[in-house]
Image 1 (tube, rainbow, N blue to C red):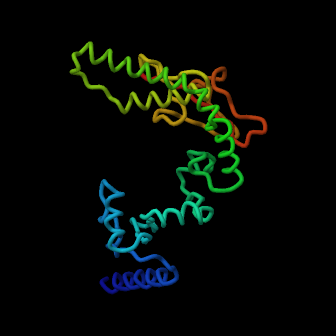
Image 2 (image 1 turned 90 degrees about the horizontal axis):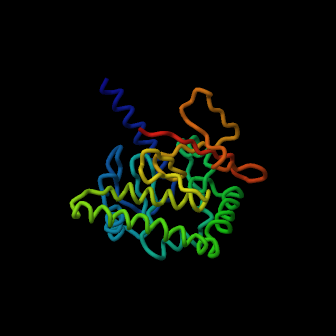
Image 3 (image 1 turned 90 degrees about the vertical axis):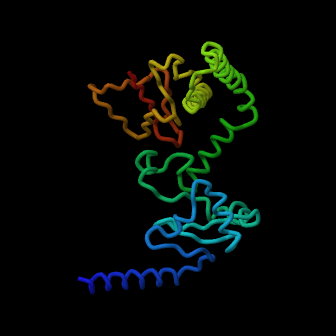
Length: 248
């Protein structure tokens, strides 16, 4: 039995050395078996990587478990990756989550670099992120921020300041409200929180983006056909439907 484990260890070691010999990687710290360099970083990842880079190089190679990582920790190194050779590193890695949840990586964050992603970026730049569009959404931002500030003032005055407010939840609702108002022209999170419909980007959202949308008649969800537009026609995006759930 011991000879079998020894043989497996030797095979793994030889395979690792052969693979490392084929790749010309930057210098970096040696790691432990299995976890590699995970033990060298903590909660403050950027500070830990900065300290390690001082010992090795502004461009260094590390391994976090099974994943090889190249760390660029200087302005010059970042410029090489993000400006001079940006097309080489512009794509996104494949992942099952992005494939199944985001309809085969068809969203702006996880989509692979190519004509489809460039078209999405063009649409966002011209239709959502232009100076004219951002300026036109300013009243919406002021209104929703005013609602949040008035709520905090009301809570502070009614309870003499001795009340706990979940700011993470409130800020998440604020972001979802502003996004839905800018995209759909309608707010989908009620202030009383008894009935909530959180749109794209919020944690309770169910976003279905697929070519053929099939929902059973007995489903407890309700499709808001009259209020949520579906992408159709010549748009390069799949149909989108937001599903409304009633929370007790």
